[in-house]
Length: 203
Image 1 (cartoon, rainbow, N blue to C red):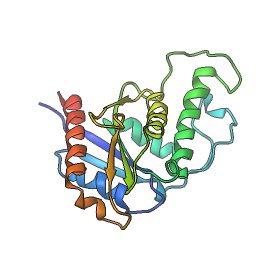
Image 2 (cartoon, one colour):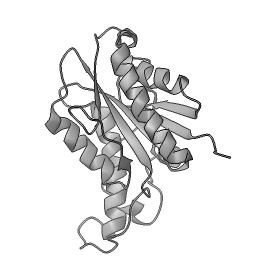
Image 3 (cartoon, rainbow, N blue to C red):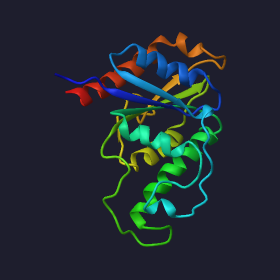
């Protein structure tokens, strides 16, 4: 009997309950999955101070990072739903930096050491995908690829899309909360790629 996939949505917006949140919630609710959604807007994420202690223990900073990482490890698949600001939101970048710093410290056993553990990764081919909420503009391919490269460097396996920016799905919507729900084609594309991800988990 196939098990029910457990998905985790990580919303990188500074705005709680905004379009990036509504998008991932709507897609999750349309599928036979268990899910949880974490909004970084509602989380305490401090900046990394390069203390190097995470090379062999949990991050020592007292915030929500370790709990979110735990939930990422427990999920069968992860969906990142991100708004496009000047780049992507600074809070998501701080979170991604923390993830990548842990991975780097454990590969190198410190910040300045040569590579010691080439096979280390935070995750072992766990599937993921990215939704980019670009408002009325667009998400440049270079920005999308930079974000995707950092995400894949953690050991996650990215599900690609057949349209630009390919490494994720670009959703155009207005700025007011809830307007993303009017983009039925975009929601359908997101649902299709999540369905493929779920099928890969439950097959």
